[in-house]
Length: 228
Image 1 (cartoon, helix red, strand yellow):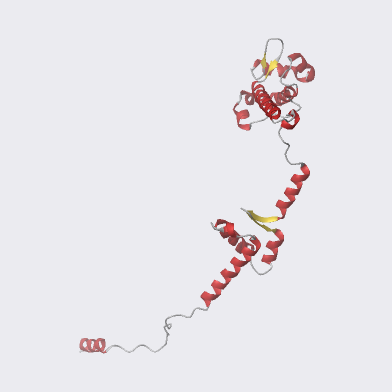
Image 2: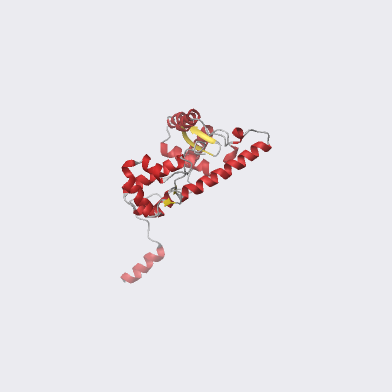
């Protein structure tokens, strides 16, 4: 089974909560190496063979057994519980896939999990991602398109704001080109600014002069009476 899955799962949270983290860093390092060797051996390993594999760390291995980090079973074999659990789940999955393969008229080999993308395919995807300045939903704007829009006189901040607005627009699914949509939104925004600037004021502004306004007659008469 180790050949079909040459790695085991390492959960950082579970590791930090285990007693092994109370050991010295040297002991923890030995334990990781023991886990790797134990997994490669299909979780079937004797203490004698383990000592032979790591002759310079026999004392540290024995300390891990004394602390209960590694279990020592009858027959001279060691046991690491979390790896045993992973192997059991792997065997169960393998048998289920093999059974499904037989039912479908496929060989066991074809029933295995399909491999992921090759490194070459992943590199191509990474290159495509690098060429994108912004992408969301089904739309994307390349770096070249961004620079072309920027060259028309818009700042990066202004373009980013428009992109945010388009992304948050609930009907953005109707757009087919993010490049054309950004240009259209920027143009409409500019037209609105120009239209507002050209609006004539409804009321004539008040003109300020150095000549004081004449005093109303009623107020002037009152002032005259007070003077008398």
